[in-house]
Image 1 (cartoon, helix red, strand yellow):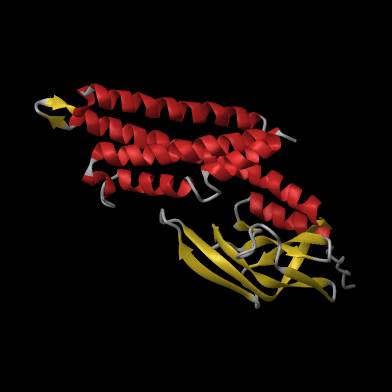
Image 2 (image 1 turned 90 degrees about the vertical axis):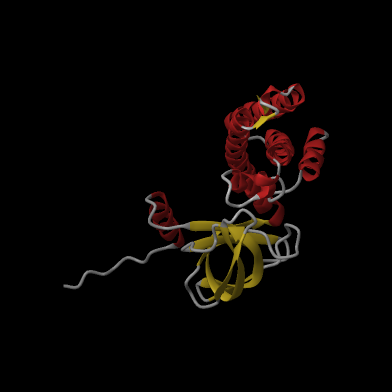
Length: 270
């Protein structure tokens, strides 16, 4: 007797997808923001049989190039939207690979009737609030990585100043350079301490404060590292170059210091 297979519902498919993700057998990217829409959902999802079809374009997203699937935000009604799981290898999904300033791969996404599996649906404000909460946690992780890059740029520059001599003395013996060096160290440590606090309490206010402090410090670190190195600090061949590009991108990829300070002010007045 041939066994009858049980139908697999959306909940079971979501569980199976999550299981493969945690095992490292699938790569997943998050592409919520539409091209030119400043965070407002513009991609549209239309019911089709037992599933959905998506139409829209997404901004370049880190990690999307080479991902097996992605999660996208799409409008489902006049006041509702949803998060959909879209397989990247199906008909209707077009990826345009790009390279970010620091060399990391990314891709823009075009959806042309692409099939999607609904993961979450609800009022637009509610769904976007959950996305903002997830993005705040991702922002804290991004800041932690950026602080690590700042530490490396700091150490590379410190070793260079100790080894490079001028008029028979190492550059690190110059008092003005030492003062600039201490200022950088204090900025990095301040960002690091705030990152530890935000990691234990990922509230919107702490995430915004951390992002503002980290983006400002990242800009200052890469600018000072180049100035203290001189021309060699701007070359791609030198070890500092990769960290300079990473910090330059980190200081703006998720918003500049003014955007984060503005959000922090809004949250503080609520």
